[in-house]
Image (cartoon, rainbow, N blue to C red; front, top):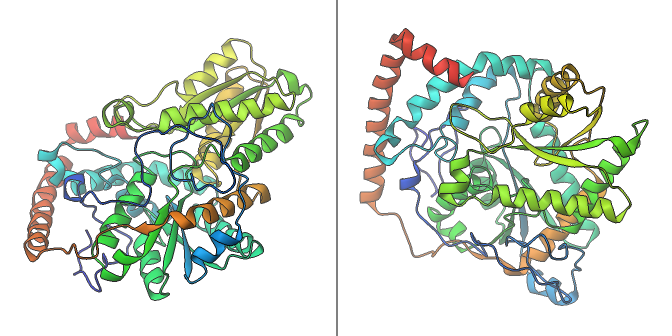
Length: 459
C-alpha cells in the first residue's frame, strides 16, 4: 500500500515517483461481484436480448455477440449516469519510468506468488528484481522509441468506444485505469466518484481471463469499492472475458486473412499464434482458465477462417516467460527454431492475447522473434497488427458494454465497513514488511553469489 493515509474512503494514489506497495493475497477480502463466475457455464445461443458477457462460455458452441440494445434495455438504465472503465496493464512512458514500473509489476502478489509466511518479503523481492531487470528492459523500450505506446493507444480506444456507444444512443463516460503505471486504477476510480457515475461497466482489455491480468485488476477494484460508501452502492458489471464474441473473432480473422495475402504463396504460410504465457502453477494449482480459454479462442478463429476457405496450418505458443519456474508450453522461441528445422519457410505471427501494440509486439515479436525465425531457416516473415482501433472490434466492445448494463449490481454490501482494528493491523503489517524487507534486500545486495544467482534467472 502507499505510504499515505486513506482519505475519502479510497486507496491513496501512488507517490509522484510511481512506486506502489501491493497488499498480499491474504489481506484482500473476498467480495461479491456482479456476475463474477470463476467456473465455466454452458453457453446457450441467445434468444433475443441476452447479457452473457461475464461468463466463461464454451467455445465449441455458437460465438456470442451481435445483440441489440432494445427499448426495454434502454429504459432500464435511462436514469443512470453510465461509466465504462477500461483496464489495462500500463507501461513506462520514458526510460526513467522503467524501473519503478517493473517494481509495481513484481510487487503484485498475483504476479509473484509467495507462500504466506514469506509474503512480507514481497516489496524487497520486487525492488531487487526491478533493479536487476531494468537495464535490459530499458534496452527494449529504447528500441521502440523510448517508452511504451500503451497509454496513448488505450486512450484512443477509450475515445473510440465512447463514440461507438454514442452512435448507439448510449451516453457514457469512458475511463482508463492501468494496473502498474499512470493513470492508475485508483486515479480512474476517484474520477468516477467525482463524476457521480451511477452505473459502471468494467471492461478489461484482455480477451482471455487470467488471475494475473483481469483477476489482479478486479481485486484492486474490490479493495477500493469496499472502503467507500458511495462506490459500494454503485451497480457494477464486469466483463471478465470476451474472446468468444463474434466481433472479436471476426476481427481477428479479418486481419489474419488480409496479412496472408501479402505472401507470394498464402496457402503455404504457417499461422503462428503467440500468446503471453503464465506460470503452469497458475493453471494447475489455482484453476486459472487462461490456457483453456486461449486454446478455445484459437479454435474459434481458425474455424472462422476455414469457413472462408482459409485452410492454413496453425500452431499456438507462449512468450514472455520470466524466472526459473515452468511456464505454459510450448515456448515461442523454441517453436520457432523447430519450425525452421522442419522446413517451414513462410510464417505469419499473430499476437493473440494483445489488443494494443506495446513492447511485447513491437520489440519481442517484431525484433527478437523475427530475427530468431530468420536465423532458424524461415525465409518469409509477417506479423498481424494488434486490433487497436479496428472498427469492427471497437463496435463489438461497445456492444458488450451495452449488453452488460442490465446485469450490473453493487459490488459490496454498503453496511460492511472496515474496522479500526483491521486498519491498525494493516498499518502494523506494513511497517513490519518494510523493516524485514529492507533488511533482506540489504543482505542480498551484500552477497555477490546471491546477486549473480538471482541475476542469471531474472535477466
